[in-house]
Length: 126
Image 1: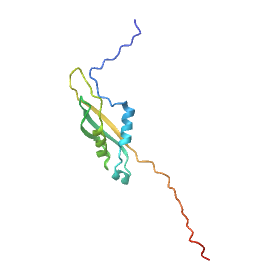
Image 2: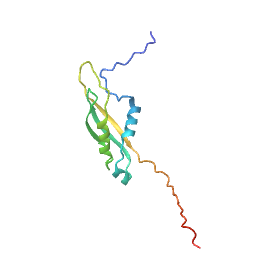
Image 3: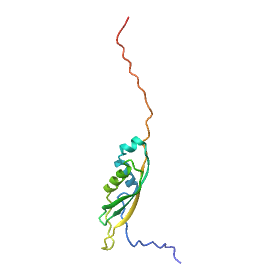
């Protein structure tokens, strides 16, 4: 018996985001614009988006699977449409991959309120 581990063969290659999941998370964080309506209504949560990626790495047919409204669903679709994946070659066969992504909308942490007083003297009033 040999110690060699058998490598799992992958029949079809799936698209991957350049730089991996860490780079994808950074892209979303950098480009996410929290909707004004969601900020005003203090809406936060997760938006689930399903989409297809063609053999060239281009996103098509993005749709909301589970949304939270208040403009967050539209923002999630805008972000997904901006994504570009690495092109995939599958032995000459054009393959469209179905992908899912969860985009987290968390309200920005409120800064502590800082009160600053400015005093002005108007001279001697004796």
